[in-house]
Amino acid sequence: MPDHTAAASIERPASLPGGNALFGSDVVADVLRALAIPFVALNPGASYRGLHDSLVNHLGNTMPQMLLCLHEEHAVAIAQCWAKVTGTPMAVVVHSNVGLFHATMAIFNAWGDRMPVLVLGATGPVDAAKRRPWIDWLHTAQDQGALVRNYVKWDAQPASPEATREALLRATWMARTAPMGPVYVNLDAALQEAPLVQPLPPLETPRFVPGMTSAAPTDLVAKAVTMLRGAVRPLILMGRVTRDPAAWSRRVALAEALGARVATDLKIGAAFPTDHRLHIAAPGTFAVPETARAIAEADVILSLDWVDLAGTLRAACAGGMSAARVIQVSLDHTLHNGWSMDHQGLPPVDLFLAAEPDPVVASMLERLGQGAVSPVVETVVDVADVPPVGPILGGPVPAGPIAAGPIPAGPINVPLLAASLRRAVVGRRVSLLHLPISWDGASWPFRHPLDFLGGDGGAGIGAGPGISVGAALALIGSDRLPVSICGDGDFLMGVTALWTAVHYRIPMLLIVANNRSFFNDELHQERVARMRGRPVENRWIGQRISDPDIDHAGLARAQGAAGFGPVTDAADLEAVFAGAVAVVQSGSVAIVDVHVTPGYTPAMTAAMTRVAD
Image 1 (cartoon, rainbow, N blue to C red):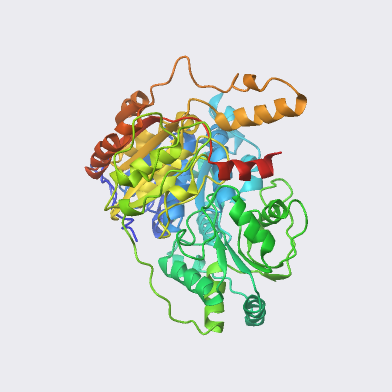
Image 2: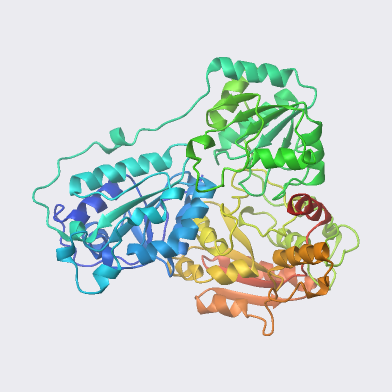
């Protein structure tokens, strides 16, 4: 695993006074250090100027170290993808109600992604007599936590240093307990800046943040194993699981012991080797036809916290009820509320194990007499296993396997982009931090839990650059090359997140799959036009990002990154990617703008059509 302490040591304060905690905000800073929070991502604001001072002049801007961000969405996104890699929370500070408004989309992403993020907020003095004219009134809300209460696990607004310490401990504990998620603690500005009447007594922090693992009862595990052993066509849907390599090996061992076929999903991180003989077909954002057929034909299905089990079963069975007996392993129901529908439909389940998937897999293996498993072996990218590029709608189809010789000149589609990238990173361990919806899962096998980190969680646009920076930060000190592929709309909404990566020396490669359109919405407009008998050729209006084309490489250079492109000829891709990789390996940030033809693979198009109409 990466060395998470290896971060750029910059912005070191001078002439530190030292000494004990003297103010309310010093207590907050001390608790963050006691909780081993390594970084605090923030966009500055006067409502937490007390905490800002404590982080710098009380703690010396180390453990935690501040990461200046240019937008609150980026700050939360960085923390979200730090958690994707490490499984542990970072802290974020957002300014008053206005900063929290900016952060809400990213907090919802972390909620949908079930990632632990400790969000600290602040408010103008709750005591109205202490508010400055105008600004403190504008930036004070009666119930600020209400802005995010429906998509955080817990929120609090403590009214004393003692209560603040307890709130931070409880919030961190709840964020880290499965099912994980973001939490919010709002700090009164007056409380932060008030001198302490007396020092708080020492606290044994670990006793208040106990580790928790939710395992299933042994009788239910035994029943599940019996059902799976008796199955003729068992299927495992690998859903939300950890990045732990040992747990990965146990999942492989379970599938092999049962002879069960396996499906994975691009909405979440790598959960099983996608080129394993038991893996059904290339993963997608929606189940590709081969996966849908396997679901429809299965007689017993084991769902390991699969995202949208009900919708997947219904789509695979043409809207009907699955005939398979379904075993669901999940704790997700403990988060469901009436505001957000992120819990999806209610699935048919014959045996429910209210537990975390990875401990259940370990228990199943013991029941099967498979205690010892082979460790996961990290492999490097090998050009020899680059597959031929299949057809993609809207783009050309190169003749023969691309690994056999130079990539032919001509327009670029996303599979060609992927193939050229794989040739440029041969011999390296790569982590794909983010992928666009046009990605073909067959383009790149996943053989390790860090090979792919999943989607943004909320299915919006704009998180790609921020979560990529967070993942790259977490991978500093590892031997992995952080690579992100974003659509152009996603990149444009989040481009200033790159400044944080450049400033804090967080190396990464980000490729813009630039089709110069919000293309997914073009297809939606085409569907509506067809349903209404109206001209489909008008689908592009209000969707195309052109006239003028945007200089994405120039935007990257404006943030201090190395910008390449636009690349418009497939024959140039490999050399450009090789140059960008060299920049990243030197410790810098590189962005490559690649003009791609709009379109999806036939399998992806079929999967999307099945759920879109």
